[in-house]
Image (cartoon, rainbow, N blue to C red; front, side, top):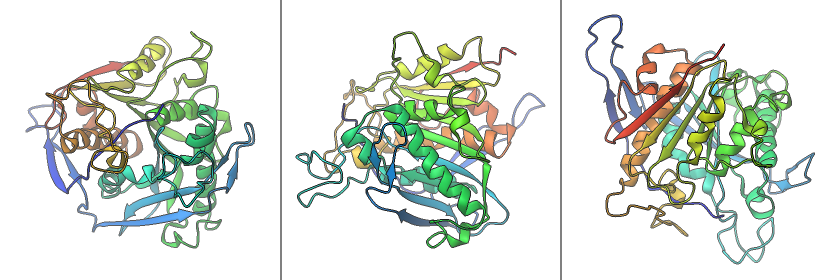
Length: 357
C-alpha cells in the first residue's frame, strides 16, 4: 500500500476560543504556526546512514535519519515529540526495489513532509524529531519494526539527554536539554499504527530506560488486527491518545476511530478523536501532495475537498492542543480536544472516551 501527499504551509496566526465567561469557559488559546514568540525555530538534521540500524527481532535494516525542529532560544529541558511517516515510495525512483536505493536513486524524503508541523510545535517550546522510515517501507511493512525504530531513535535521544552519544556532534545545543521522561509521538497512516504499537500496554516495556511516552497522536492511521479481533498489540490504556481522521480519506478511511472503540471501558486516561470533514489522506504530508514528485490527491470527494493549507492548519491546531495539554500540562486546551472550541477553518466532529477507572 503506497500512501499519499501534502503542500507547503505558510506562517499564520490562528486564534481559537473567546472571552472567558466563568470557570466553565476556558480562556482564549492561541496557535502560532511557523516561527513564534520564542525567538524563532532552528532546523537541524542527523543521518547515521542507510544501514545504521538492524531490527533485533525481524532483522530489517533501516536508516537512522531525521530532521529536528527546536526553539532557537530555550532554557531547561524541553519535551520531545517523535513523528513517523507512513507507507510511501522509499526511493525517488519507482523502479527501485532494494534498500539502500540502487541505480543512482536516492531515499525519498517523506520525513520532511511535516516540517510545517515541526516548526509550529518548536515555536511553542517542543523539540520535534521527524524520522525517516524508508528502509522499512522498502523491505518490511511490519508495525513492530516501526515501533522499534522509534525506540532506536529514542535511545539516541536518551544519550543526548545525558550529554553524549552519536547526536551530540550535530545537536550539541540540545545536549542535556531534552526531557526524555516527557515524550509525545505522532504517526501518519501506517506510522499511526506504529506509534500505537510502540505506546501499547503490551509493548511499553520495550521503551529505552528512562523514556516515558505521555501523548500519542495517530494521524489518519491504518487499523486492522492480526489475528482478527486481537488488538492487544495496539491497545493503549495508560497514555492519552488523540486520533485525527478525515471523512474523504481514500487510503485509510476513518478506520482509526476504532482505536477509541478499543479503549472504551478499558482506558485509565482520556482518549480523544476528531473527524475532519472533507480531509483526505495525503495532504497532511507536503511530500505526498501534488505537485510534489509522486504526489497524489486521494480524496473521495474532490469536488469539495479541503485545501492542503486548511487541512494542515487543522492538524497543527489539534496537535498543539494535545501536546500543550499533556506535555506542558496546560488545561486550557481541553476545550479543543473535547470539541467545545472548534478547529480553525474546518468542520469537524470530536469524540471523547473517559477513563473507566
